[in-house]
Length: 334
Image (cartoon, rainbow, N blue to C red; front, top):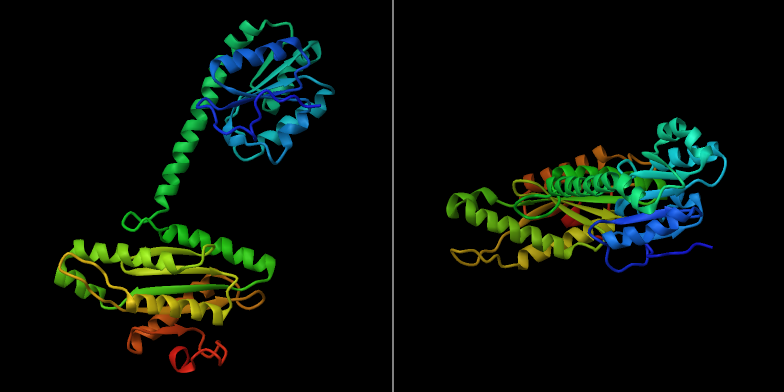
């Protein structure tokens, strides 16, 4: 049976220091060191099996360190450690192995597999804490740096003006959704939106007012999308909308709802309220038929260009005549 001191999965608040996992604490020093770790401020979880290292539910991102109690054949232990090190997020987690002579004689093998420190089982908990303190500190710093880097990467994926995903994030999302559509055999649609005559707004009112329009426009698009879709700003006054599991008719209907929202919306600007229009280009890819990001986004761009050339303030679908007749043909098809 597994005895949990503080469950990593059930706790409400994670310690700022992170959590420590004690695996197979049969050696007295491992049972005693748990109280030392708790006193230092770590969340502590004790489990009886090394298989916990390979459990998909183990939250590697929250671990500041792992103590391993030697439990059996060295080759089996080495294999588990190697497989754990291959997990995402496991690279910076200190592994401390506590064992008898069997473990000490195989220190080099354990170290090569990913164990950071091998400690004799007759070590006192005070001395064990002294030996592992630098490693646990390193683990906490590594986690903090990793989280900071993740935050920076996420910020780099956002548009500074609107807070929406930027072109880079959109490209990654589009590739991921195309692959998902291929696997589950469902369609994926894309809408490219461009504000009509946006250049005149900047020329007449200045860039600050133009920026306000972009923020309000992005907020409006984000409000009309479905919860599992995503809207991004590609740059300038161009926005993109990915619609998961949406066929051509559904995508065109979504674009028409957004088109109507733009027409009805009053943009509050410092010179006074302004009404705008926008042009929408729509495309869909389906499994077995041109299922690629290039076709998805390329056709949406072609539809947008077609809409601009045919007078703006419209919704267009490309390739032409793909949308069934129940959708208003004179609005969407040639």
